[in-house]
Each structure stands twice: as C-alpha cells, then as structure tokens.
Length: 327
Image (cartoon, rainbow, N blue to C red):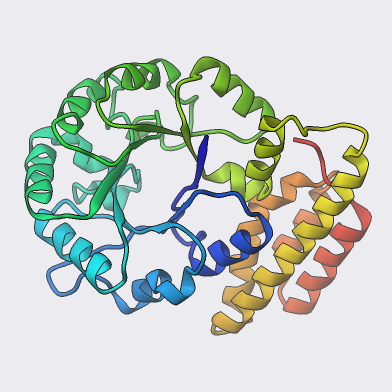
C-alpha cells in the first residue's frame, strides 16, 4: 500500500508537513493545500513559501492546483516543474466550499463535464508534467460520477484520488463505497481512496472490501492520530498490539508531545503574534484532543486560553495527567 497525506487548507502547510515527516515517517506523498493561479501570476508569495524545495526536503510533495481555466493550470504547472522541480501536480475537483463551488471550481467543476473534458484535453496536449486529480463523485448525486469517469478515462491521469461523497454531503453521511467500487471497476487510471479512515478497524474493513486498491489518502484521520499510518504499517507487517502495548503507548505519548512542541515552536516563529498562534494550535487540538482519555475539561481550557502561558500550562497538564486511547 501507498499512503498519502491529504491537502487540508490552512492546516497541512509546510510547517505541519515537516513536523509530521520528522516524527512520523512512512508517508509516501504529502499533498499541499491548493494553489490558486490567476491571470496575473501562477503562484502567490504566500503560496511560494509553502512549495519552495527548501521547505519540503526529504518528502515527496505534490502541489495541488485549484482552477477551472486550462491556461492558468498550465502556467502554474510549468512554473512548478521548471522553477521548483516538481514532477507531479494535482487538480482539485473536491473542495466543497461555497465560495469555491460558486465560481465553478473544486467540486463545482464536476457539474460541467463537457468543460472539464475540454480543460483536460488542453492540459494534456500542452504539458509534460504528471497530472493527477482529487475528486468527489459529483455535485448532487453519486450517479453523476459515471459521466465524470467517462471524461477521466479519456486521459492518462497519473492517478485519480476519489473521496466518495458528493458536494452537497460536505463531510456528512457515509462515504459511498458502492460507487467507489464502480470506479475501481471502470477506471482506466490508477485509483486512490480517500475518506473516513480514522482507526485500524476502519483500515481493516476497507482492505477487506477492496483488496485490489493499493493507494490510500488520509485527511482528518491523520490529524486526530498523526501516528495512524505508522500503526497501519506495523499491522501490515504483523507487529500489532501485543505484550509491549503499554510501553508502546507511553512511547507514543512522548512522541506526540515532541511533535506538538515542534509545531508550537515553529508556528511561534512564523506567526505575527500570540492570537494567530493560539488560533492555529486550537484548530489542531480540535482533532488531536480525541486521542486522550478524559480530555473534555482540558479541551475546554485550551479553547478558553487567552494567552500562551495559559495554553502551555493546560497542554502540559493534559500530557501529564491523561493517557492516549487506542482508537
């Protein structure tokens, strides 16, 4: 199996990717939050910071592009290849945000398969870089994906990452495994699964259902448990929970604390003040806190923390007084 880290806007930027890579080896690819090229430039100064090679050392990083204009995509892809040395780019066809969809981008582009077809035809006629897509099933109904797959099958996509929900689902409802199975059957391009893999049990269930699928992308599951892919790799190699489980959980908490401290320190250097720093850390804790036993009172204090001293004290208490749960 190959394991990918999903692009999560505002979260999985280069600071998070580098910290995760340092403490939790095992990811085959990291995808960047989307770049938004326009008529004036391919990459903004802020986006440039995220995709610079010096900020992505030792990782196989894939920039994601959000646009419905082939010319903008080609310009960005060319710059990413020639200036930054990337060998693959990913087209965002999954973002369900209202502001994105209203402009016909992200999941909104799926409502116009003829325009998507023309877009891909121009892209593949003019680019030499590998192009993958990250997609939903459609806008309103999963059956829309048959027409979308017809479009994808016309082109040599490097891979198709499928989040089997429609746009109107956002992240509600269960991923549609029946339609994902149809994609596995019909797609002429390699398929990667993405959606709601939070635990080892989720992974086992998926592998039983789709033994032929060899690529999986994780999003929120890795934000909750940054070690999830490492745990899966141990499971695959027959080194799952056993007599050393208690000791392993102690080591896991030590690693998680070091991961947190690295993130906190790096964000503190990057952020323009304590308020944005605390906002960033609270956003991360909205996921990670669920790893801990009896975490409710600590989470309330983290959310209410108005200064870095209050925040750090609460986090130290959490690590000292609670244990990690086996999800």
